[in-house]
Image (tube, rainbow, N blue to C red; front, side, top):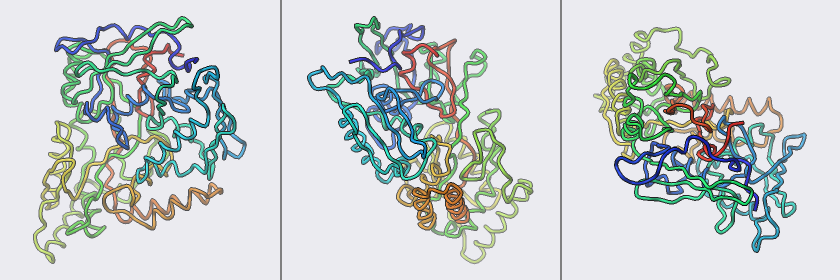
Length: 478
């Protein structure tokens, strides 16, 4: 069976190292994450698991290194003029095989996969699909409830990379040698050479240490927990590569009891947080705070002013302190506000800054682990779509364990089948207004993602989605 074009070409200079599990071994790629979770099929997928699934599965379409849509299982596709139907044609299926893969196999696998995303943000994103049909052995049609310009981007999510046991779709194979994972492709009759890529998944601290010790050419999915470990003085210029992403980064209201039972008090906490000072210890240039749940425009676009933008930080904290004092005067002392944060240096820095801001308005803060019972919970997620629905779906009552709005969810649901784009936008805008009025989320700004790259690595590029397919490290650049 022919192999999809994304891995047909010879592997290049990245694969310079030998694999192994010894302490002095050299690895091509370091991923930040939990090694056990990376091999599980949790929904939604942790970042490292998403990279592994993308490499070892095949979606209808995929992303290239620059974050652009490219063929995968489907060799080509057309979109009807009304934007309601996507028709995919498969040319890599070999009918002479004993058990050839068919479009109906793809249809069934895709439907089964989508069913696994119930009560997740991705599951709500996929509600746009009205039906999936196998029109011939080589053609699948997906019909939508309303036009969605970024539908191919949605299909390229790593969670939708499909696996077909015993069938060759051109995906890479995975083997493990101790803590080292090896992605491989065999030699092919078309002259394709065999190639492999060694991957180690470890904590932020360990991954950065290994990279700076020269044990890898590439480190992926760096975030706030990895930044404190990067020794800037020991890295060449251009080694740190920031992705121009947007998304969700802030505190969700996990419990609306006590002081947090009133939206005005939840807003007081938002007022108290000095967002620039919160991020300053991480030395990220160009990061801009955002108080809105749904950003306006593309990443980097200046956001419209918020209701408190005309006030200084001191004035905002003074307003917040008045609300805290007013509550305490009638309800009594306010117990420390519990905040669920991930372990590690990044979480340490965030808590110190949040605790200081809380103290400035008369509140105490208590840090708990990410899985512990808490009133506030850190939420960080890179946006996969530039659409309001993506953000609103992440705060649906079926998805988030905390303060939400059933009325807002209803409006978002109504928008899915609304053909009039202006009416659809109005429904989504009203849903966002309801969530904002309830202060269901305290936004800090966009999340942060970076990679560490040693020299020139073919198949890697920064992109607006912050996703760097491992399969592209087996391909020549366009």
